[in-house]
Length: 349
View (cartoon, rainbow, N blue to C red):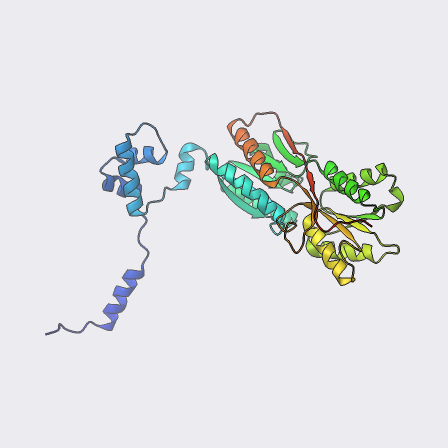
């Protein structure tokens, strides 16, 4: 015979109990499971070498079985470090920044550091908010990518937080390391290439880094092409490049070549050329900057100035790790050398 029917209210209570979150396992639970003291568990979790391999494995096995996760906040209070690095990026839509972060994260991981990412979207208010959030989390260091520390919030943060700035060289702050590309050389490589192809009416779409525009101006004058200088400023996006290219390509006479300050702007130039019925490179040659993975796409095949993004990321990580270890170090600058990668978007006049 079956027992008395279970009331529906009882079933609902049982289901509610089943769905309640289980309490998180504690260090005491791990110690009891492994048959050791709490202090020994703490030593194992801190990576202390003063624990036998047998006991270390017992503690790690118990932690795995229980699903134990160390309390990062408590550990940071004990060690005085969080092992976190805040990386603030100007625009995550730009593949250059994403590819840089790959190299940065690889090296930080090797140094036992974890990376948090903030995206400022070129907005100073977002920059300040992201940095304040990083500081509240007590990050060990900051990496500012494409962002110059000019606001009071950023300047104050760099005064007591180890910081590396990437892509901005005019930084007059003590103890802030810098990683940059030789932008003026990169611009010269682009202009030299176009001049060799017979171009004179070479325009430039200016992005957020004035040093590339300065390199363009110097190179044009060096080739005695000052009368043909054309510069159009643009928002650092594909749409910004498209609008600037429309302005340049509807001039009379129009340029026969455009050097864009980054690949996103150059993609906008290609779109504008299509809008106006111009063939690339027969009617218009286009050069970008950064050599992102998009430029190497078979359908785009964009001639672009390469800055070694992963190398820059690794350099930034090495500088930051050194500065975390010794905040009193003299500020250092690491400059990488660009290279022109020629593809199908450029051709003779």
